[in-house]
Length: 338
Image: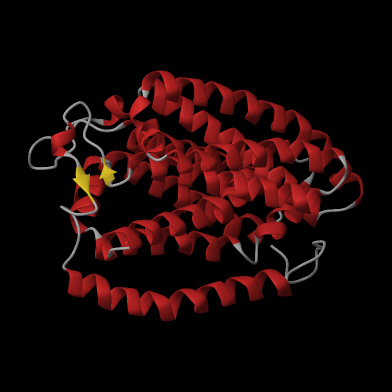
Protein backbone atom coordinates (compact mmCIF):
# COMPACT_ATOMS: atom_id res chain seq x y z
CA UNK A 1 0.00 0.00 0.00
CA UNK A 2 1.45 3.39 -1.02
CA UNK A 3 1.86 6.33 1.36
CA UNK A 4 -0.87 8.33 -0.39
CA UNK A 5 -3.44 5.62 0.26
CA UNK A 6 -2.30 5.21 3.85
CA UNK A 7 -2.86 8.91 4.47
CA UNK A 8 -6.23 8.76 2.73
CA UNK A 9 -7.23 6.06 5.23
CA UNK A 10 -5.79 7.96 8.21
CA UNK A 11 -7.67 11.15 7.36
CA UNK A 12 -10.86 9.12 6.93
CA UNK A 13 -10.30 7.42 10.30
CA UNK A 14 -9.82 10.77 12.05
CA UNK A 15 -12.97 12.21 10.49
CA UNK A 16 -14.95 9.07 11.30
CA UNK A 17 -13.66 9.23 14.88
CA UNK A 18 -14.84 12.82 15.11
CA UNK A 19 -18.28 11.95 13.73
CA UNK A 20 -18.68 9.12 16.25
CA UNK A 21 -17.42 11.01 19.30
CA UNK A 22 -18.67 14.53 18.70
CA UNK A 23 -21.80 13.09 17.09
CA UNK A 24 -23.34 12.21 20.44
CA UNK A 25 -22.25 15.59 21.87
CA UNK A 26 -24.10 17.35 19.07
CA UNK A 27 -27.03 14.99 19.53
CA UNK A 28 -27.30 15.90 23.21
CA UNK A 29 -27.33 19.57 22.21
CA UNK A 30 -30.01 19.00 19.56
CA UNK A 31 -32.25 17.39 22.20
CA UNK A 32 -31.39 19.91 24.93
CA UNK A 33 -34.48 22.13 24.67
CA UNK A 34 -36.72 19.06 25.03
CA UNK A 35 -35.26 18.38 28.48
CA UNK A 36 -37.38 19.67 31.37
CA UNK A 37 -36.11 21.82 34.21
CA UNK A 38 -32.76 23.29 35.12
CA UNK A 39 -31.42 20.29 37.05
CA UNK A 40 -32.19 17.86 34.24
CA UNK A 41 -30.59 20.13 31.65
CA UNK A 42 -27.51 20.42 33.84
CA UNK A 43 -27.36 16.64 34.12
CA UNK A 44 -27.38 16.30 30.35
CA UNK A 45 -24.68 18.94 29.91
CA UNK A 46 -22.56 17.23 32.56
CA UNK A 47 -23.02 13.91 30.75
CA UNK A 48 -20.82 15.33 27.97
CA UNK A 49 -18.94 17.85 30.13
CA UNK A 50 -15.70 15.87 30.65
CA UNK A 51 -15.39 14.77 27.02
CA UNK A 52 -16.94 17.27 24.58
CA UNK A 53 -13.85 19.44 24.10
CA UNK A 54 -11.61 16.40 23.64
CA UNK A 55 -14.01 15.03 21.04
CA UNK A 56 -13.74 18.23 18.96
CA UNK A 57 -9.97 17.77 18.85
CA UNK A 58 -10.53 14.87 16.44
CA UNK A 59 -11.88 17.36 13.88
CA UNK A 60 -8.91 19.67 14.42
CA UNK A 61 -6.52 16.73 14.05
CA UNK A 62 -8.29 15.58 10.89
CA UNK A 63 -8.02 19.07 9.43
CA UNK A 64 -4.34 19.21 10.38
CA UNK A 65 -3.66 15.83 8.78
CA UNK A 66 -5.45 16.98 5.63
CA UNK A 67 -3.37 20.16 5.54
CA UNK A 68 -0.09 18.30 5.96
CA UNK A 69 -0.78 15.31 3.70
CA UNK A 70 -2.97 16.88 0.98
CA UNK A 71 -2.41 20.66 1.04
CA UNK A 72 -4.09 21.25 -2.33
CA UNK A 73 -7.32 19.71 -1.01
CA UNK A 74 -7.11 21.75 2.17
CA UNK A 75 -6.65 24.96 0.18
CA UNK A 76 -9.50 24.25 -2.24
CA UNK A 77 -11.94 23.01 0.41
CA UNK A 78 -11.34 25.79 2.90
CA UNK A 79 -11.57 28.50 0.25
CA UNK A 80 -14.56 26.95 -1.53
CA UNK A 81 -16.42 26.31 1.74
CA UNK A 82 -15.28 29.58 3.31
CA UNK A 83 -18.74 30.97 4.13
CA UNK A 84 -20.08 27.59 5.24
CA UNK A 85 -17.03 26.95 7.43
CA UNK A 86 -17.36 30.41 8.97
CA UNK A 87 -20.97 29.60 9.87
CA UNK A 88 -19.83 26.23 11.26
CA UNK A 89 -17.21 27.98 13.38
CA UNK A 90 -19.84 30.41 14.71
CA UNK A 91 -22.17 27.56 15.70
CA UNK A 92 -19.36 25.72 17.46
CA UNK A 93 -18.23 28.85 19.30
CA UNK A 94 -21.75 29.58 20.54
CA UNK A 95 -22.14 25.95 21.55
CA UNK A 96 -18.88 25.89 23.51
CA UNK A 97 -19.50 29.25 25.18
CA UNK A 98 -23.03 28.14 26.13
CA UNK A 99 -21.69 25.06 27.93
CA UNK A 100 -19.19 27.12 29.92
CA UNK A 101 -21.34 30.19 30.63
CA UNK A 102 -24.78 28.69 31.21
CA UNK A 103 -24.43 28.04 34.95
CA UNK A 104 -22.43 31.16 35.79
CA UNK A 105 -25.60 32.93 36.94
CA UNK A 106 -28.80 31.57 38.54
CA UNK A 107 -31.05 33.80 36.40
CA UNK A 108 -33.70 31.86 34.46
CA UNK A 109 -33.49 34.23 31.48
CA UNK A 110 -29.68 33.93 31.42
CA UNK A 111 -29.74 30.14 31.46
CA UNK A 112 -32.60 29.84 28.97
CA UNK A 113 -30.76 32.10 26.55
CA UNK A 114 -27.66 29.92 26.69
CA UNK A 115 -29.84 26.80 26.40
CA UNK A 116 -31.13 28.14 23.09
CA UNK A 117 -27.58 28.96 21.96
CA UNK A 118 -26.41 25.45 22.88
CA UNK A 119 -29.26 23.71 21.08
CA UNK A 120 -29.28 25.93 17.97
CA UNK A 121 -25.48 25.75 17.76
CA UNK A 122 -25.55 21.95 17.97
CA UNK A 123 -28.31 21.67 15.37
CA UNK A 124 -26.56 24.12 13.03
CA UNK A 125 -23.19 22.40 13.35
CA UNK A 126 -24.69 18.96 12.63
CA UNK A 127 -26.63 20.28 9.64
CA UNK A 128 -23.64 22.11 8.15
CA UNK A 129 -21.35 19.11 8.63
CA UNK A 130 -23.89 16.90 6.88
CA UNK A 131 -24.35 19.36 4.01
CA UNK A 132 -20.57 19.56 3.54
CA UNK A 133 -20.30 15.77 3.61
CA UNK A 134 -23.11 15.49 1.04
CA UNK A 135 -21.42 17.95 -1.30
CA UNK A 136 -18.09 16.13 -1.08
CA UNK A 137 -19.82 12.82 -1.80
CA UNK A 138 -21.76 14.22 -4.77
CA UNK A 139 -18.86 16.16 -6.23
CA UNK A 140 -18.31 19.88 -6.61
CA UNK A 141 -17.99 22.19 -9.61
CA UNK A 142 -14.25 22.91 -9.88
CA UNK A 143 -12.20 24.69 -12.52
CA UNK A 144 -8.82 23.72 -13.96
CA UNK A 145 -7.04 25.49 -11.09
CA UNK A 146 -8.97 23.41 -8.53
CA UNK A 147 -11.13 26.31 -7.35
CA UNK A 148 -14.63 25.43 -6.18
CA UNK A 149 -16.93 27.63 -8.21
CA UNK A 150 -20.18 27.07 -6.25
CA UNK A 151 -21.34 29.66 -3.73
CA UNK A 152 -23.16 29.00 -0.46
CA UNK A 153 -26.55 28.71 -2.17
CA UNK A 154 -25.07 26.29 -4.69
CA UNK A 155 -23.94 24.07 -1.82
CA UNK A 156 -27.49 23.96 -0.45
CA UNK A 157 -28.69 21.58 -3.15
CA UNK A 158 -31.42 18.97 -2.49
CA UNK A 159 -29.05 16.02 -2.13
CA UNK A 160 -26.71 17.81 0.28
CA UNK A 161 -29.66 19.06 2.36
CA UNK A 162 -31.02 15.50 2.54
CA UNK A 163 -27.64 14.29 3.82
CA UNK A 164 -27.62 17.21 6.28
CA UNK A 165 -31.07 16.31 7.66
CA UNK A 166 -30.06 12.65 7.90
CA UNK A 167 -26.96 13.69 9.86
CA UNK A 168 -29.06 15.74 12.31
CA UNK A 169 -31.42 12.82 12.94
CA UNK A 170 -28.52 10.34 13.22
CA UNK A 171 -26.70 12.48 15.77
CA UNK A 172 -29.92 13.07 17.74
CA UNK A 173 -30.46 9.29 17.93
CA UNK A 174 -26.80 8.74 18.86
CA UNK A 175 -27.03 11.39 21.60
CA UNK A 176 -30.29 10.00 23.00
CA UNK A 177 -28.79 6.53 23.37
CA UNK A 178 -25.75 8.07 25.09
CA UNK A 179 -27.98 9.97 27.53
CA UNK A 180 -29.82 6.76 28.44
CA UNK A 181 -26.44 5.29 29.34
CA UNK A 182 -25.45 8.30 31.47
CA UNK A 183 -28.69 9.17 33.29
CA UNK A 184 -31.05 7.38 35.65
CA UNK A 185 -34.50 7.59 37.15
CA UNK A 186 -37.34 9.62 35.64
CA UNK A 187 -35.04 11.50 33.25
CA UNK A 188 -33.63 8.28 31.86
CA UNK A 189 -37.11 6.77 31.46
CA UNK A 190 -38.31 9.84 29.53
CA UNK A 191 -35.28 9.91 27.23
CA UNK A 192 -35.64 6.17 26.62
CA UNK A 193 -39.08 6.85 25.10
CA UNK A 194 -37.40 9.16 22.56
CA UNK A 195 -34.92 6.57 21.32
CA UNK A 196 -37.23 4.35 19.26
CA UNK A 197 -38.94 7.22 17.37
CA UNK A 198 -35.49 8.66 16.60
CA UNK A 199 -34.31 5.25 15.38
CA UNK A 200 -37.27 4.96 13.02
CA UNK A 201 -36.76 8.55 11.84
CA UNK A 202 -33.11 7.80 11.10
CA UNK A 203 -33.92 4.57 9.27
CA UNK A 204 -36.45 6.48 7.12
CA UNK A 205 -33.83 9.15 6.34
CA UNK A 206 -31.20 6.47 5.71
CA UNK A 207 -33.45 4.69 3.19
CA UNK A 208 -34.28 7.98 1.43
CA UNK A 209 -30.62 9.02 1.30
CA UNK A 210 -29.54 5.61 0.02
CA UNK A 211 -32.17 5.74 -2.73
CA UNK A 212 -31.15 9.29 -3.68
CA UNK A 213 -27.49 8.24 -3.76
CA UNK A 214 -28.15 5.29 -6.06
CA UNK A 215 -30.31 7.48 -8.28
CA UNK A 216 -28.33 10.73 -8.38
CA UNK A 217 -24.78 9.72 -7.42
CA UNK A 218 -24.05 6.45 -9.26
CA UNK A 219 -20.31 7.23 -9.26
CA UNK A 220 -20.18 6.27 -5.56
CA UNK A 221 -20.89 2.65 -6.52
CA UNK A 222 -18.29 2.44 -9.30
CA UNK A 223 -15.45 1.11 -7.12
CA UNK A 224 -17.71 -1.54 -5.60
CA UNK A 225 -18.80 -2.70 -9.05
CA UNK A 226 -15.15 -2.92 -10.08
CA UNK A 227 -14.14 -4.73 -6.86
CA UNK A 228 -17.18 -6.66 -5.52
CA UNK A 229 -15.33 -7.31 -2.24
CA UNK A 230 -16.17 -3.69 -1.28
CA UNK A 231 -19.88 -4.61 -1.20
CA UNK A 232 -19.06 -5.89 2.30
CA UNK A 233 -19.09 -2.26 3.50
CA UNK A 234 -22.74 -1.45 2.61
CA UNK A 235 -23.79 -4.90 3.88
CA UNK A 236 -22.08 -4.27 7.23
CA UNK A 237 -23.64 -0.79 7.32
CA UNK A 238 -27.14 -2.23 6.91
CA UNK A 239 -26.44 -4.83 9.60
CA UNK A 240 -25.17 -2.16 12.01
CA UNK A 241 -28.21 0.06 11.41
CA UNK A 242 -30.58 -2.91 11.79
CA UNK A 243 -28.89 -3.95 15.04
CA UNK A 244 -29.59 -0.60 16.74
CA UNK A 245 -33.35 -1.17 17.28
CA UNK A 246 -32.68 -4.81 18.13
CA UNK A 247 -30.32 -3.95 20.99
CA UNK A 248 -32.54 -1.13 22.24
CA UNK A 249 -35.59 -3.43 22.21
CA UNK A 250 -33.72 -5.88 24.46
CA UNK A 251 -32.60 -3.10 26.83
CA UNK A 252 -28.94 -3.35 25.84
CA UNK A 253 -28.30 0.37 25.36
CA UNK A 254 -24.51 0.05 25.46
CA UNK A 255 -24.54 -2.41 22.56
CA UNK A 256 -27.03 -0.14 20.83
CA UNK A 257 -24.60 2.74 21.26
CA UNK A 258 -21.77 0.63 19.83
CA UNK A 259 -23.99 -0.28 16.86
CA UNK A 260 -24.82 3.39 16.34
CA UNK A 261 -21.10 4.23 16.46
CA UNK A 262 -20.34 1.42 13.99
CA UNK A 263 -23.04 2.69 11.64
CA UNK A 264 -21.53 6.19 11.64
CA UNK A 265 -18.04 4.85 11.01
CA UNK A 266 -19.25 2.57 8.21
CA UNK A 267 -21.21 5.39 6.53
CA UNK A 268 -18.01 7.46 6.40
CA UNK A 269 -16.15 4.40 5.10
CA UNK A 270 -18.81 3.86 2.45
CA UNK A 271 -18.31 7.35 1.03
CA UNK A 272 -14.53 6.95 1.25
CA UNK A 273 -14.69 3.74 -0.79
CA UNK A 274 -16.94 5.44 -3.32
CA UNK A 275 -14.66 8.46 -3.74
CA UNK A 276 -11.24 6.76 -3.76
CA UNK A 277 -8.78 7.85 -5.12
CA UNK A 278 -10.54 11.24 -5.25
CA UNK A 279 -10.55 13.56 -2.27
CA UNK A 280 -12.48 16.36 -3.94
CA UNK A 281 -14.39 15.05 -6.93
CA UNK A 282 -15.07 17.59 -9.66
CA UNK A 283 -18.58 17.26 -11.02
CA UNK A 284 -19.36 17.52 -13.92
CA UNK A 285 -15.70 17.74 -15.03
CA UNK A 286 -13.90 14.81 -13.30
CA UNK A 287 -10.59 15.73 -14.97
CA UNK A 288 -10.42 18.68 -12.54
CA UNK A 289 -10.67 16.44 -9.47
CA UNK A 290 -8.15 16.49 -6.64
CA UNK A 291 -6.91 12.97 -5.95
CA UNK A 292 -4.57 11.42 -3.42
CA UNK A 293 -1.85 11.68 -6.07
CA UNK A 294 -2.10 15.16 -7.58
CA UNK A 295 -2.80 16.87 -4.24
CA UNK A 296 -0.33 15.10 -1.94
CA UNK A 297 2.78 16.39 -0.22
CA UNK A 298 6.16 14.94 -1.18
CA UNK A 299 6.83 11.26 -0.38
CA UNK A 300 9.44 12.31 2.19
CA UNK A 301 6.92 14.53 3.98
CA UNK A 302 4.32 11.78 4.01
CA UNK A 303 6.87 9.31 5.38
CA UNK A 304 8.03 11.62 8.19
CA UNK A 305 4.45 12.43 9.15
CA UNK A 306 3.57 8.74 9.18
CA UNK A 307 6.30 8.13 11.75
CA UNK A 308 4.97 11.00 13.87
CA UNK A 309 1.40 9.69 13.53
CA UNK A 310 2.52 6.19 14.55
CA UNK A 311 3.82 7.70 17.79
CA UNK A 312 1.05 10.23 18.40
CA UNK A 313 -2.15 8.35 17.54
CA UNK A 314 -1.67 5.60 20.19
CA UNK A 315 -1.13 8.36 22.78
CA UNK A 316 -4.34 10.11 21.72
CA UNK A 317 -6.27 6.84 21.81
CA UNK A 318 -4.88 6.01 25.24
CA UNK A 319 -5.79 9.45 26.59
CA UNK A 320 -9.30 9.26 25.11
CA UNK A 321 -9.89 5.79 26.53
CA UNK A 322 -8.59 6.95 29.92
CA UNK A 323 -10.96 9.91 30.07
CA UNK A 324 -13.97 7.79 29.19
CA UNK A 325 -12.93 5.20 31.79
CA UNK A 326 -12.44 7.78 34.55
CA UNK A 327 -15.83 9.41 33.90
CA UNK A 328 -17.73 6.16 33.33
CA UNK A 329 -21.04 5.52 35.04
CA UNK A 330 -24.09 7.65 35.74
CA UNK A 331 -23.72 11.41 35.89
CA UNK A 332 -24.59 13.27 39.09
CA UNK A 333 -24.62 16.93 40.06
CA UNK A 334 -22.14 18.30 42.62
CA UNK A 335 -20.34 21.54 43.37
CA UNK A 336 -17.94 21.02 40.47
CA UNK A 337 -20.73 20.44 37.92
CA UNK A 338 -21.66 22.85 35.13
